[in-house]
Length: 114
Length: 112
Image 1 (cartoon, chains in turn purple, orange):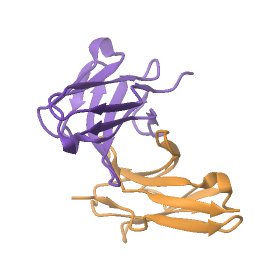
Image 2 (cartoon, rainbow over the protein chains, first blue to last red; image 1 turned 30 degrees about the horizontal axis):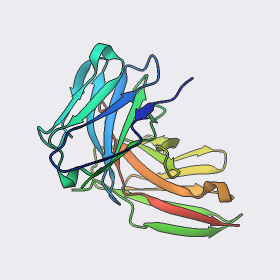
Image 3 (cartoon, rainbow over the protein chains, first blue to last red; image 1 turned 135 degrees about the horizontal axis):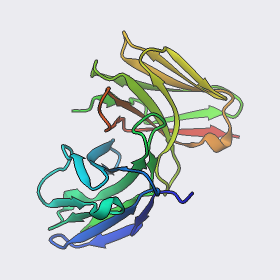
Image 4 (cartoon, each protein chain N blue to C red; image 1 turned 45 degrees about the vertical axis):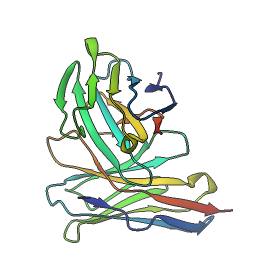
């Protein structure tokens, strides 16, 4: 079974530019999550999709962040315009039945805004 | 405001000895706890979990202990192996929620 795939693995952009991160969950996993880890800090929840619907987006920092999950398959997270404080590692995770066995995380996208 | 805290950023242990990683939480509504292991350039990998109805859960070399009154949990690794060297994250959730609250992680180094 293929794992959770994220790309790009790294992205360096200038402040004010737009970046789109993509996540392909494990096939059949209805639950998809985005998390972010800023350097040295905790991994923080951003949002949760169930299929194509946003179940919980309470962790989204502000309206510069837009997440979509078209057709309930892959998801994108767009940051527009990017600010310096958006730098960090963005993790995507998926699960079939919630938290019972934890999620499966992707390797993350390291975003650096300069 | 951090609800899950791992106060030790790093820990070094000799191979074969016990590693004990600690985690504290502040939210009394948390009733499900997980430990994840993370290698560089990889995502966190689920290791072991415990529900608040238990105070211990064991899986091979890994045991998690939960002290609800103290709002404290710990992960014991016995015996520690060099391949256990990684960053360990504690995470917590409450019933009905699907999001996790993570600590800042503890970097474990097992010295051969």
